[in-house]
Length: 315
Length: 239
Image 1: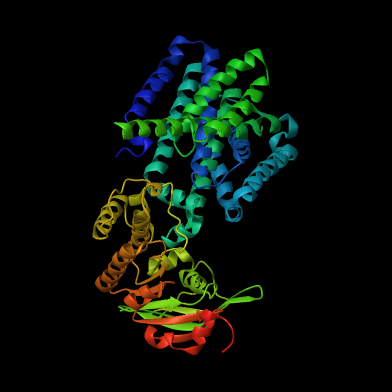
Image 2: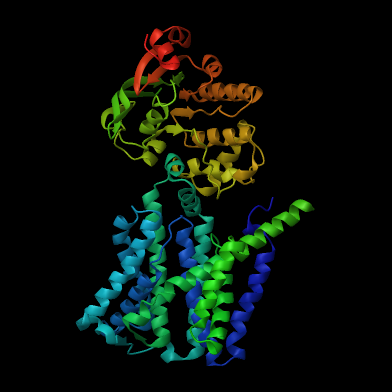
């Protein structure tokens, strides 16, 4: 009867081991490895948030937009309102979520490619506004963060990012296990059938869009804490859309663990490749996406689920 | 006791009037057949009542409430249930989860209660193997799941859009019994779109005949079948 991957006993073991590695990593490594860990976790959070929305069938290219928005909201609130680093991260999530909630009224009428392109354009609009609003944002030069979380100490910042990731994993699992899962899956499969079962499509899409944008904003704010500054080019970089997407495709869509596995594999591989072929790691990402889509469209988690199921039916 | 009534219900798509001044009603306990040649507007009529389309003019009354302008998901909660001519199971959900959706959203139950109610409903329909994916069940099971999904919304009025299509004669007889039994137990008003006249004669109390969006005849099937306009609609040509 184990028809779903979550019910299987293999995954908790794998993630238990992964969790232990994550926990003891700081004690056996220098700041360099920890900074890689923080970067991977940032991408992991973005990947999970992208997956949470694609579960409703809506393909968003707006990650970098909300990520950049969140990083600016955090830095500007710290500079102008003297928010402490942690409150500024929460503030960034609220700003990104609120803006997603407001534009969602218009954007969520669109579907498929129209929705995808509009979310991409939305990110560009955010970037252009911030680029040109020099008096507030510092324009192309960006802004410096006056005070880093834990004064930039490596281990506590790493721990903060691990905690952040655990919260997002829990949130994603809540989405998978609550009525939201039923609504989003029904919307993805067939909107007319979903409506006929009483599902308010707009309401559930708005929830998913707002929550995922808030996560992306918080991720941007967390990243600003790692680097200590924001510029339009770095904060709104297209990589923050494309890399999480590649990670999710590799790990497997429609689950929490797919993006987690994809982020760890591709993130670690990418940091490693960067040393030998700077920027060439993006080419490798591209090749991986093509190979995954051709030969393993369900990603690692989907593939493993299928193999396990096959094994069971042969018993 | 509920009644669904349409009043001069009309919808035009560009120059094509797919539903043209349709007046009909169904009361609790009645099973009404909706028949007519291909393209007559049978499914369009159901889509209008379910709220997939909004009418160009005319009204839809559920008891004393005009529901013609409210969105589909609210109509589902108010008691309009339906199945689909082209079956679209929710493939990302198991059979049980498919049935749960109506309990969860139209009836606004919690997960646990919805799961129990869905199990109970499937048991009465003799639908088993509920943890399977929708791709793994046979045609009769799929039809039962579709009926269960419609019933899960706790309808007062239920439309079955060619629910017997694709079934063999034994399965069809089973399906007819199921529909009759459910309609009686729940005191439902049922609208049945069907091409097989054997099903219409066994199942319905009366029929309406649609042609090019208009009702051209109504009454017990035996009377309607003798109607010259109905014959010409099916056979083509002028009378």
